[in-house]
Amino acid sequence: MKDTQIKKLIDTEKKRQKKVINLIASENYVSKDVLEALGSELVNKYSEGYPGKRYYGGNEITDKVERLCAERALKLFGLKDSEWHVNVQPLSGSPANLAVYTALVPQGGKIMGMSLAHGGHLTHGHKVSATGKFWRQIPYGLDATTETINYDQLREIAMKEKPAIVVSGYTAYPKVIDWSRMKQVADAGESLLMVDMSHIAGLVAGGVYPSPFPQADIVTTTTHKTLRGPRAAIIFVRKDGRELDKKIDKAVFPGLQGGPHMNQIAAVAVALKEANTPAFKKYAKQVVKNATVLADELHKLGWRLISGGTESHLILVDTWNEGKKNEKGAGGVSGKDASDRLERAGIIVNKNAIPFDTRPPADPSGIRLGTAAETSRGRKEKDFKKIAIHIDKILKGE
Image (cartoon, rainbow, N blue to C red):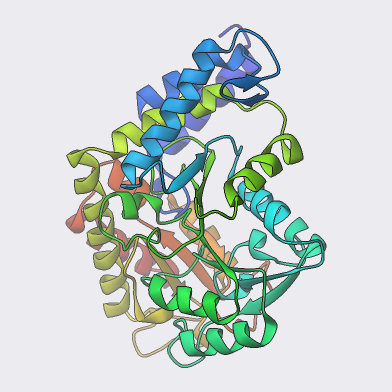
């Protein structure tokens, strides 16, 4: 690379990634093939429109790339083309969710989504997001006692509010979601069920997390978390006679986006093929095994885990615990302080609010951990036991 300044920064970032333990739950490491597709000549092509209906010439090859990506998305999740439509053009998860609402929820209409403070995402209707400015969020949270989803309570909210869409799938909820119960919630409100499976897509593909497709009307997902692809997104839409797919396609283009990033779509296609292998299924199982071990070890060392533990790749740890250390010396560390201490020691996490948090979002009571990235590096249960001990010592000042 002739640009020495940028090359130096890239090389420095490579070194940083290699020397740290990455426990960011929304990050992963892509293959060389994915990187090659991202850096390919496809970046030069403008492909505004959809396959067979482009607004520029010279798109014979890109049409094949996009169609192949959509075919691989359906195949990976065991879906039939006659029953599901796929849009692989969204640039990332937030615009994918925005496209769904733009297509299906009238301005000022209701979106029923988990509050950010309890594990939901900004684009599930939070007030600081465009999704909370153009539409009204009907928030729901976790049960105060169990710190898990109370489906009966959600059903009552849906019956009362009648939202256009009920959103399930979260960024900081470690337990398995009962999709059948969420469908009952949506049906009670005469609502569409939208599942944002961004965090768990790779686990669903790997067969270690229940699939939302039998119950959902719309499924959105990013491709760069447990799915181990580039930063992009996919929207799956059920074909049921209501033409939801056509409305969402129009919302993506021309509603919100211009020409898609064809290099990105090609890289997604590569990742989808990689995910449809026995090796990836083995990887997904190991991700969950590693998360279980990490959670169990931290619990043994005295740290309080939100929802009582994990059933996925994700762990939410209460490091503050009302500002008091327990008999094992765990607690009394704010989320920001915990994140900063761990980063100085080479362990990267993110500070995170916990349900019913009394601390401010900028310095909450917890941290979020994930095992997908380090599992990609080959780490197994014995490694995560050591990582738990390191985390414990660092946060206890030892």
